[in-house]
Length: 94
Image 1: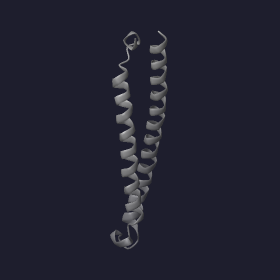
Image 2 (image 1 turned 90 degrees about the horizontal axis):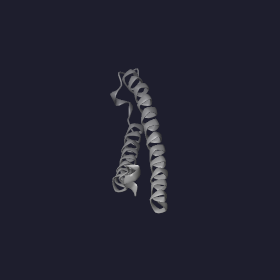
Image 3 (image 1 turned 180 degrees about the vertical axis):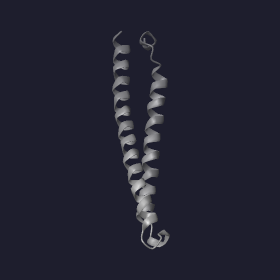
């Protein structure tokens, strides 16, 4: 019956799984980057901290963007799971 509402449920479920793995992998990898960043010493500065200061400013913007993207991905997964449940219910009813 899912064909009547033009949804390939198996493909939808596969996509949700892939998106979840992507979210987990991206989050884990970015946490590793944040950890490594926190361990950086002062050795790569110009004596006044300018190199690290500029990178820190840019990196903070990247950090915000990555967190926004991960939050959007989590919202998408939640929505897709609800949609999948509606499709299953519809398929079971009709």
